Length: 336
Image 1 (cartoon, one colour):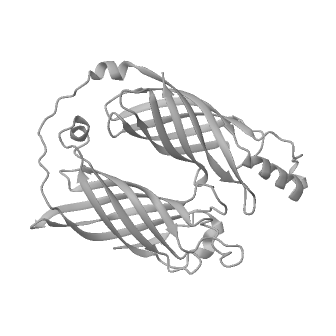
Image 2: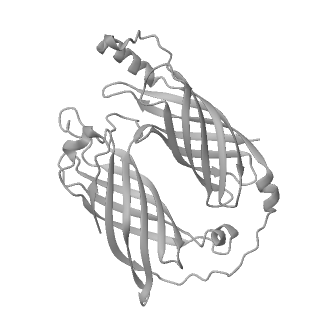
Image 3: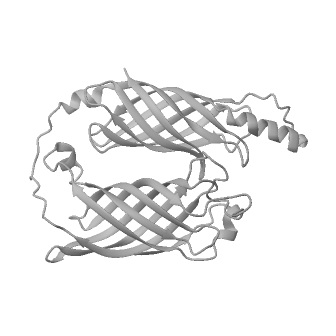
């Protein structure tokens, strides 16, 4: 069970922050491949699925139900746990221009739900039964697919029970199956095409977009690596933004013919769950930024999967300007 407080990350949602949300979480987890080196190197993490029910107790926000996939990492003799969770959320009270115009946080029924938790875990206190308690934060957003999308962030405390059906037998030592020196010495070169749909504002059409880029990177350890790149943003939704600003705010200086493309450069960090799966974050800057939209600095967070014995990989991420999401991006890449 959890009890929380929704943060005022944007003054536009202050009217929605009158109550404390409550809810519950149910999850199932399994130590995946405990005999593999990646599991041993990461202190035998767990993968699993979970469901959460989040009641805002605010009529305009309603309740959210979410299905997640998650991963747990353990520290301090498995007493401390860090959880990373990503899922799909159903909101029962999204924005509607007539029926629910007060909800400017969620513009669609389906959202992306992202959770981070830091927990204390005590297993097997009595015949497999233990406890789990901690703090977490959950973020709901549709990534700008449909406006409004002011989004919401809730910090919460939770406590619950945990039951282990069986104790996982883990080996004390596992040998690495590839030559780490060769892998770490290699600089990788990647071509990446990202795409998706987003929207300029309420009532405007949803537009497709793509981002074409190239990057290079290097692993410096089994778990960590760096990367940097440049990319071209082809963003037709900005056409609607430019047209609106030129008509509604003539004093802004927009002519309506400004370029809707942008060029970005970025650097980032990779955290490797295994040889195939990694989590990445980017921090970027637009050297070419012809229209003043949000900020010249942008950030990304996402996951990447490299197909085994193949140069191809796929990725998913959210790109934002600070806490304001612009888009959810689905990517396909090729490593040279």
